[in-house]
Image 1 (tube, rainbow over the protein chains, first blue to last red):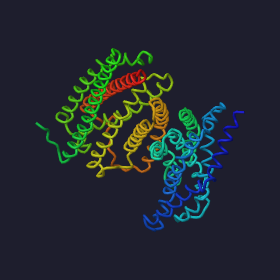
Image 2: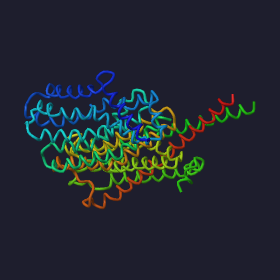
Image 3: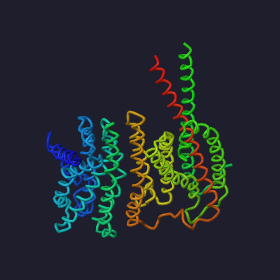
Image 4: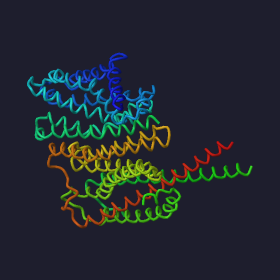
Length: 221
Length: 54
Length: 243
C-alpha cells in the first residue's frame, strides 16, 4: 500500500516534465546554449576547445540541473499533493527520491545521452571514450539532482527560491564536479576518479533522500 | 613604537587592519544587538505590567 | 547533560559571568600573541620574511572557520534530536560570527598569498578552496534561515542543512585535496607541520585560544540577545491576546 504514493509521485514528476510545454527541454536548451556560447566567448582554437570541453559540459550540466530544480517540490506543496502523499504514511524520503530520480530521468539523462554531440562540437576525438563520458555524465548528473533536490526541498515553501537553491547546492556539487572533470582530464588521477565519482554518487543516493524527506515533512507542516 | 617590517610591511598591516575592522565590527554589532534586545525586553515588561494594573 | 544547559534561564545566568570571563581572557591572550607576533619573534626567512607574521591572525581564523562550522552542526544535531531551544539559539548565533571569521581567513590568506605566490588567489591551494566552500555553507545556512517564515521552520530547515553540510565537509575536503595535489607547484608555503619553530608555537597557540574565547563570548552575547528578543516577542503576543 505504501508503495503507491511513491509511484504516483514518480509518475506525476514524469508527466509534469512533459506537460505544460517543454519543461524537460529547458535544461537541454540551457545546456546547448552554454555549449554554443563558449566557443564564441573563448575563441575557436581546436586545441583549447578540446582541453576545456569536458569541463564546460560538467559546468553546463550542473547549471542545467539547477534550472529545473526550483519547481520540483514547490508545485506539490502548493496544490496539496505532498500532504496527500504524506498522509498515506509513505516514507517522505522515498517520495522525494522518486521525484529527484524522475527529474534526473527527464532532464539529466537526456543531457548525458546527447553529450557526445556536444563533445564533438568541442573537437573531441570520435572514439569509445565518448560513451564512457556519457556514462560519467549520467552518474554525476544523478548526484547533482539528488543534492540539488535537498536545496529544492528545503526551499520548497520559499517563493522565488532559485537563488537559495543555488547557494545551498553549490558546495554540495563540488566533489562531483571535481571527480567528474578529473576522470575525463586524462592526466594523473584520471584512473581513480571514476571510482570516486561513483562512490560520491552512491553517497548522495544514500544521504540526500533522508535530508529531502525531512525537509518535505517540514514543508508540509 | 611600531615594529619595522621588510618590504611586505604593507601586506602585514593591511591584514591586521582588516582583522581589526572585521572583528571590531562583529563585536560592536553583537554588543549593540544585545543592548537593543535588553532595552526592548525591559520596555515590553513595563508595558505588560501597566496592562496588568489597569 | 544537554538538558541541564537547555534551560534558557540557566543559560542566561551562566553566560552572565562566563561571557565576560571569555572576553577578558581572550583579549589578554590575543594581545600577548600580537605583541609576540609583531614585535618579539624573529622573522622567518624560509617563510618569506616578515609576511609570516600574518600567521597570528590567519591561523586562528582558519581554525575558527572549521571549528565554528562543526560547532554549528553539533548544535543543530542536538536541537534536531532533543529539540532543546538553547541549542538552536546557539546554532543561529554561531552562523554570522563563523562566516565573519571564515571571510577573515580568506581575506588574510589572500593578502598573504600575494607576496608569497605572486597572486591574490591560488586555485591550487586546497586550504583556500575548502575554506571558500565553508564560507558558502555558512551563507546558505543564513539565507535559508532568513527565508523561512516562522522560527520553528527556520530552526528545522537550518538544522537539516547544517547536518547535510557537515557530513559533506570531509568529502568536499577530500575532492579538493585530490584536485589540488594534481595541479600543485612547488611554491606552496608550509606553515604547519613539524618545521615550525617553537618560538612561533606559543604565540600561535595563544592567538588560537584567544580568538576561540572571544568567539565563544560573542556567541553567548548574541544568544542572550536572541533569548531576550524571544521573551519580548512572547510578552507582546500575550499582550495582544489579552486585549
